Structures are given as C-alpha cells and as structure tokens.
Image 1 (tube, rainbow, N blue to C red):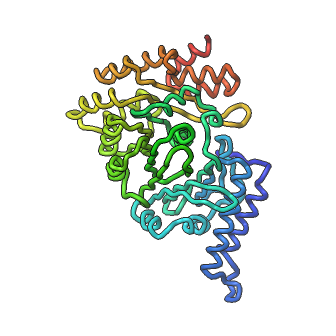
Image 2: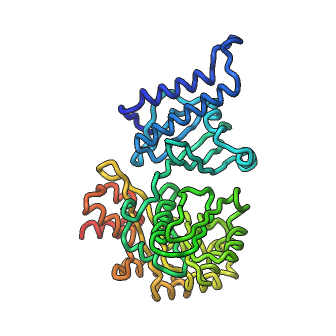
Image 3: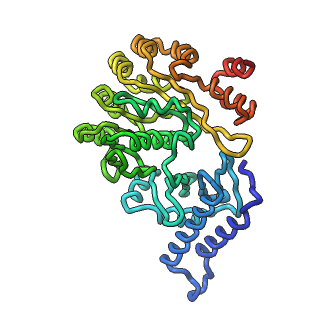
Length: 392
C-alpha cells in the first residue's frame, strides 16, 4: 500500500479540496459553475499537482478514481488527501488531450502523450480507462538531457555511441529508465559526431537540440501513422543514426534489422527482463519458417543488448542495475547456430569485453553500499548465481 509522507499531505489535500469545490459547487443558480470555469479550475489544480511533483522530486503522479492522489518518490508510492472522484479524475485529465488524442482514447481506451507546462516542466502521460472511469499516469521528464554519468550507467555503454553501424537494444520493464538511457546515448552522438540523427517515438520524450549533429524527431500519430511506415520512409532520408522508440511488430523488427545491416546505427527498445530474452523475443515475433533468416540477420546486425532495472538505494535515490551483452564473434555464432542457452555463459565470462550479468551488477552494487543485500536478492533473476557472487 502507498505510504503517507508527513512532508506534504496538507498541500496535496488542499489542492484536492480546491478541485472538489470546483467539481461540486453550490447548487444555487448564482453559484453554479460553468463548464469553462470548471475546466479552468481543473487545469489550475493539475498545474499545482505537477509543480508539487517536481518540487518533491517525484518520478510519477498517479490519478486514479477511488484512490488518493499519489506520487512515486524514489520508487515508493506516497499518497495523501481524500480519494479522487471519477468526475475529478476526468476533469483533471481530459483538458490534456487534443481532439485527435480524444478520438484515440475513445477508440483504443488508452492514449500516450507528452506535454509541457511553462515554468513547471515537461511530462509524459498515459491516460486510460479502469473500472469504467478515466485514470492517468504522468511521468516527470528531466529538464536536461541526462548523461551516462548522471544516470549512474557503466562507462562501457559509451562504446555504443562510437559505433558506425549495427543494432543496440535497451530492454527492461516499464519505468526502468530505457528512454533516459537512449537519450543519453543520442546526446553523446550529438556532442561528439556530425551525423544526421532521426528518431521515431510515441510520444517524443526528450527534445534534442542540434549541436554537432542534425537531429529530426518524428512523433507517431502526429508526424507519421506508425513505426514501420515511418522507418521505411526514414531509410530514404539519408540518416546516419536511427532511434526507434519501440519494436512493436514483426514488420518494424524486420525493417530495423535491415537498417542496421545496411550502414546505419540503430537504437531501439524491447520489454524483456534480460539480454537473452531479447534475442528470443525477436525470433518469436516471426513464424518458424522465417526464424533462421532472422537469426542470420540478427547475428550480423547486433552490436549489444543492455537490460536494466531501477533499484531503491538505502539513501532514498534509485540506481540502475545493468546487464550488458556485447555481440562478440562468439555471441554472434551462438545466435546464428540457435544455441541461445549458451548466451548466459558467454555473458558471465565476458568481463574483458565489457559484459556483465545482472547478478554481477547486483553484487557490485551491494558491495559498494548502493543497495542492500535484501534488495539485490529481490531483484536477481538467478538466485544461485547471485548468492555465489555475493559471497565472493
């Protein structure tokens, strides 16, 4: 259950009270609020909530009918105030949507978007339905483009920003920092290389300015209808580096592999827990009759896979545990031959090539004092291997 912080429940409760007064005004004709007044009050209340989330260092703001307004701070949920009513949630969230996004919400029952508030910050939101009511999850995006150092990521990842062609996959569950890692890698390229970089995102999260590189950012649903069609078009736009926000379907995956094989550096993401699962996920997206061809393409195109998860530290911050698979000659051979079960062995013995398993990463974080032993054990995928590394 979410905890209750003593730092700001009064402030949060006051914002909720203002919203409730706007949503349930006095019933007399003189005091009855108009739709525009209600919309204005809701917008003002949401801005106050967003400003509070930024001040408190929250990563997310959750607006769910029947539950108090909730912030996620350092990975933990903290709630305050009375439960949000269905009408309050609706009035807070609907003003964020354009007409096109409203239609998409009606059609798909869920919509993703990014928006900015002057003087407050930039945010990513998912608005969806649950129990017949509208709900929202709003992510606070950092003001500045993050760096490898600010994200506490291994310096080995810099190697991917130096590559000229091939496929780099960032994997992990939702909210593990994949977008931030990709933004840091693109920023490295933008700082040190004179390249044409094109990103396809849904939605655009981090806005990159042109520095050494020329950067175009395409938003699915705004600038292009889908990932696959946009990617095919991009290949005719003379890019050096391509970022594909997510490989959602076989057509997109196949086009990504082709792009990585034909002289482009391609970054993308998958929702898998570890690096070996990423290989399996790509292959399983295709019929068995096509998998040998995909294996061949993947073995040639792959540069590396990074799997990450964000863990709470004893000091309240969150740090990434990272598994890195480098596409060495041995790893490419294993993928081509279908010996995926051997990838973990190659991974665990590949420290000289910059590889690290999730268990090795967790053990190192425990020894450095960034996380507790209990946290490490709760987030390891292979308990025996983790226990062995923790005892070393």
